[in-house]
Length: 196
Length: 185
Figure 1 (cartoon, each protein chain N blue to C red):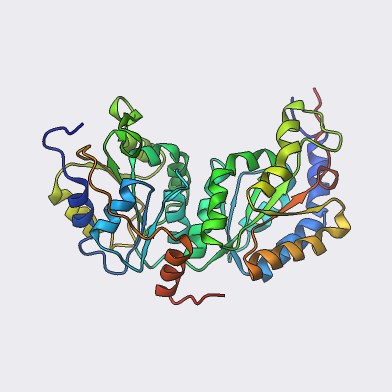
Figure 2 (cartoon, each protein chain N blue to C red):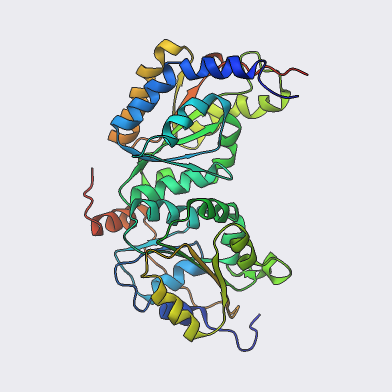
């Protein structure tokens, strides 16, 4: 499955989040959640183990509630394809503090590597731009990832969308916490919200 | 033409209905901030009130399941919300409703009913018939209002249990309440 010269997904995510500061990060189910866990557990990580297609919308709800903080969604091409309409919803709301990064391995890695739509014609950068996310780009180098990661901190210039074609190798799983209540309460606690 | 029998009269009647105002007042009192919706004629008065209220953000969706995920994110960020949709949208939400159990966040949906009470359009009937069952199987408590005079009371109960007890709740607004859609040529 691996293609030459494509970036390693773990390296992409750790580079992208290297200087995340106060950012809130939502990871889509499957490998994206493992990548976020591998980059380092954090009170402000929201790991998803289901709800496929919902990552961007969760990021949007969070971004609208916390407009002064950077909110980042890291997800895969399959999860993004399932929630493609949410790009139109983001395009309408224009949350300035929301950034979406799609790790595009052109396949459903968690279920046996079946090809996804992005392997042929589907162009998620084009979709995002056409939905009104004018800052939509394809990234291909670690330098670009690093620069895009720094840009996340500017909460007045989003929404942003980036797609990066990554190496399709299935890496060893790094399991995050999968207790939703724990992760949610921890994140809320980091924002100063107490349990009811 | 598929339209309400007399759009202007009907709109005037909807604009003067008291129960959407009662719903709005309760949402405001509970400090609801994010109001995702897929439009329905039965929600039009409420949607207009939301869009004109600075403390609330009306958020049009492409499909109802987006709203479930949005409300989970909103709560993660410290805000409450309410999802407005028609009964046909409930089926679009099923897998995403898992979030209400995984995150136990204050989930409230206001669902205008179709497919009942003199429905003209057969295509509305299957989902309208299964709406309550689908919600209950998904772990959502269901309340229903069928008469204008009871909306405030039922809405108060729905909002209280959703926002105070984190009990995921759907309030079904009966077609008898909102008026059966009339199709004329």
